[in-house]
Image (cartoon, rainbow, N blue to C red; front, side, top):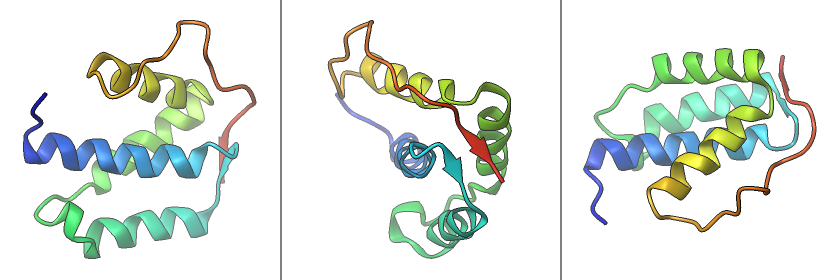
Length: 96
């Protein structure tokens, strides 16, 4: 399994976002932190993920916890984890 650099960067960014969303709430402080990570971390060098962050926040607002489920489904399909179909994260999620 080989990932292109940009695909890996986006996967790492979505992972960080989902970690922040897994407690059921994304605080403004967490949003600022992920923006700082995007701008200053070597992992995201050369990639502006502001638009992707806004998209993720919008999806979180619309779909709630399902954004995290979709993330797990994506990494499962890529072979990073083995996830049973019955596994899911419970709870409601919000931003703000």
